[in-house]
Image 1: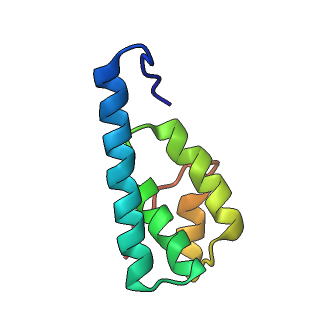
Image 2: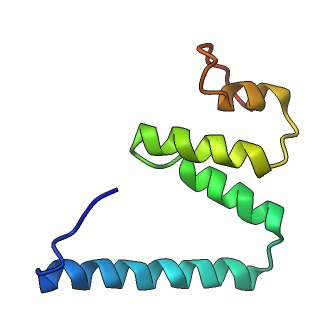
Length: 89
């Protein structure tokens, strides 16, 4: 993860503002009315949009343990040891 200079007020302020925005987004999602499985799906789809491949792999491994998989092809794609790429429709 990215580290910030805690002695730099501008950097700290920016991080705090981003976190506040993130909390508001989470509140909007929760206010929309989602169940736990939907929350896991949202985390999954957000994970797919991260830039750091190592973070993606680690999160996918953890999500695979708790997320309901309804598509066996998707399960294969989520398996980081599988070198074959499959398109999920």
